[in-house]
Amino acid sequence: VAIVVVSVLAIISTTFAALTLKYKNKIYPRTYVGAISLGGKTVNEAKTLLTNQANRLPEDSVIRVDGEKQATLSLKDAGLIYDIQATVAQAYAIGRTGRLAQNLRELFHALTSSNHQVARYSLDESQFNMVIADVLRQTNTEAKNASVVLLDDSTPALSPATTGRGLTQSQLTDVLMAGLGTFTYSIDVQSQILEPTIVDSQVSYAVEQTKQLLTHTPFT
Image (cartoon, rainbow, N blue to C red; front, side, top):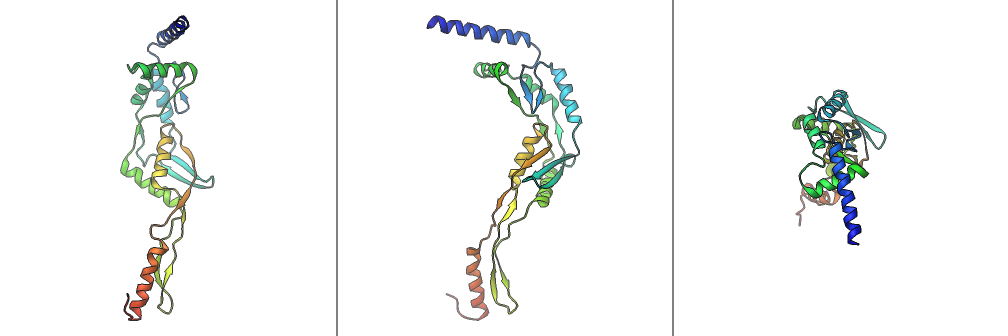
């Protein structure tokens, strides 16, 4: 058994040594940023490839909600800038971090499956939040809070709460930022029920209190 284990370890070591020699000064195979393969590329080749991809940036990102409602988000207004140098450095570091366990795991993936990275980028946070809010206005049916209304005879009544349908700001932000990291600009997302912040039970007491006040009857 010991001989078998030693033999297996020797084979693995030889394989990894051959891999590191073959890809000296190159990104290891099966390394991806989104769907873009950087495997076998030098740092400069990878920079050129990703720069060309970033230069094809569309004016808008398209968001489809439930496959129907569609909104656009201006990437220019959001201040999107890709950090190509940092993205390539991140890809080149795979299998070379200096931490043995992680190196071996990433080299194993380079041989058998893949290593996936996301692109590094920056946004103008205030502008990004503004365009996010604009997209939510385009796509959401907002929830309605319960409230007190006066009927024609000045009788107070409950205007019931209703749920809405759409996306939350955090949900849309997460989906968009994940897409930008993979150079994905056409995004499908499922909406969710939007709950009102003030519900009927919270307003019913106020309705009764208002009725008592209008009829000048002491309220207890």
